[in-house]
Image 1 (cartoon, rainbow, N blue to C red):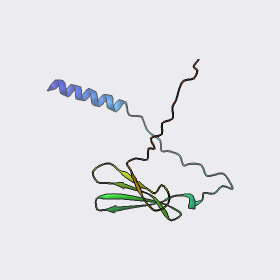
Image 2: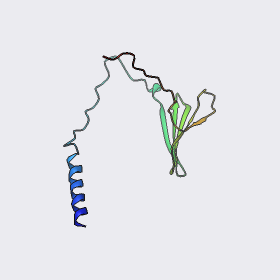
Image 3: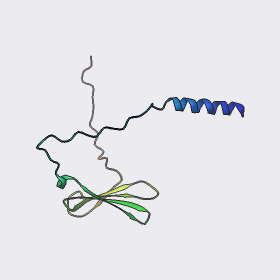
Image 4: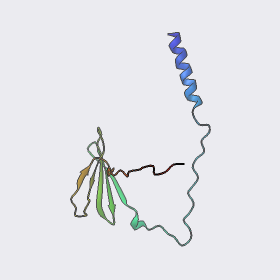
Length: 109
């Protein structure tokens, strides 16, 4: 018992020593350069709602629904995406396209 208590104390001390000291808050981002203004029409509009226990996020651009993210209370999130813009949604379990670019070492020094 005493040995496990000693091990726990050593573990707690080592974990406390690994925490970074006094984190500073992030500074405000700089303003855009003069003459450049953000276009709110290019920003997606996100509507978050609850349907039963599920959280539904609807993404719209220029008022047109193009993606829905459904996060169930239990389980993994999935996406409904309008790929062709015809209003028909197809389900995807992640936004990963599966594209893997090959990387070969051509020359090394």
